[in-house]
Length: 357
Ligand code: PHE
Image 1 (spheres, protein in one colour):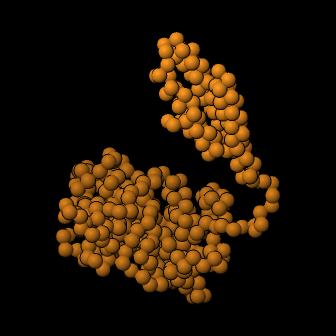
Image 2: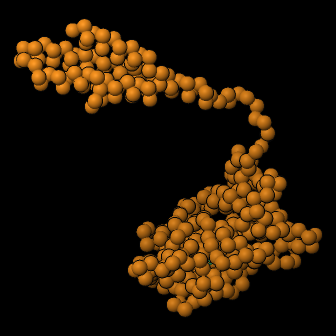
């Protein structure tokens, strides 16, 4: 049995001496792997007499078990040591002073979005979301867009390649498909806003191919345009942090609302800067209207029982107006100087009670 004793102390010494998991695995393969030293000994049993095999077999198996246990224990020890070393090297001293007082900041569009959401949340609106990649039904058909409506054409909409099924997906051109998704899946009364990213083939000082909208939808019994006007005026006064705003509805056309209007807000442009809540100018600020009966029908709501209003506004544009940015394209130029000038502190979450901005 001396050969077994020698082998045992050899292998156990190697196990104890393995410096890392890789070295340990090499020791394992060399001892108990398919062609390992201990596995080789087990193969010699076949040529032995039954008595010899009994003793020798038991001894070899005991050795194999001992080695296996030693490997398992060594492995656990190496893993613990490795983790300890990693934890020690990745320690972060949170008490150290930050090298710069403020490195990152909240983008004005996101700040504006949070402000809009905070105001509507306080007015009892829930936030609804939907996918950026939409189908024709939700973006157009259910919203009462006629088959040949120009907004479906390539110059407005980013289309994907047509699928084998003939279906053609698109990047949503507005957040109105979220209205459809909400009406299809929820029973009235409905009171939601749909904030999100939207896409159109457009690029100039006041349009970017990617922009952000917030839409609102209210569906209930006996809802009329007075509710719409009050909701929007209340929102605008809070958003622009003035006591009251004066607004006007201008007749407009959207396929999904009837009647439809654009809302202008009274402002003063005299000093080169736009001041809301005073002055003699009007500024177009959003689109709105009473939800078209065809849209309600397409979403399974009976227009004789329910009606409602919807509105939609460009968040980037609202931010531009409130924070005085001259060109929308700067928003996406990733200029750090612009971001540190117009950015907001991440700790200043908008709250209508303590002030929004
Ligand atoms: N979806 C319209 C747009 O993107 C905005 C809108 C929404 C108008 C809801 C009326 C009602 O232009």
